Image 1: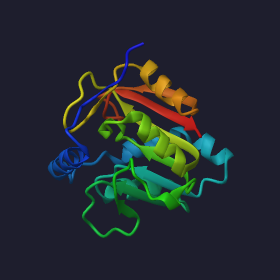
Image 2: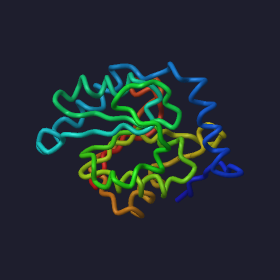
Image 3: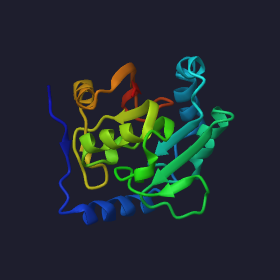
Length: 196
């Protein structure tokens, strides 16, 4: 099994600076509405069997579109987002590092969604923190990457790496599907539903 590889920053400040630089370069880019529909409708059977899904947190949203798209698919559910360099005043999006959520967020959200896991330089820390703030499920689109870089600091090249990361945090994999770059999923990788 291959080990995941992370970009090494000089310090935390450099990590934040690099993520903000990347955010500014892509601040208006977002996935399509179809991307979110494909993901959330695929897992509808899990969420309709569990009527307790009332809150969703989307980690690393970049702009308002992701929160709005997820809200439109999940009627009646409160949807929140986070981003390290969010600059607007959208009421449901918090400006913060998704590795350092507020202490008061323990088990705050029924479902955590993210397609930004490749932005972490510390995958174990990230999953541990995300598990802390989640009550029920995590829905993560892990993106395939052979090389870590200053803007996407995590390289993941196999599903074995994801399984290993999840096992370390005692997260149960309920479902996994490989995704392709030239599809509604936009990126090659693995769409994974985890039970907390």
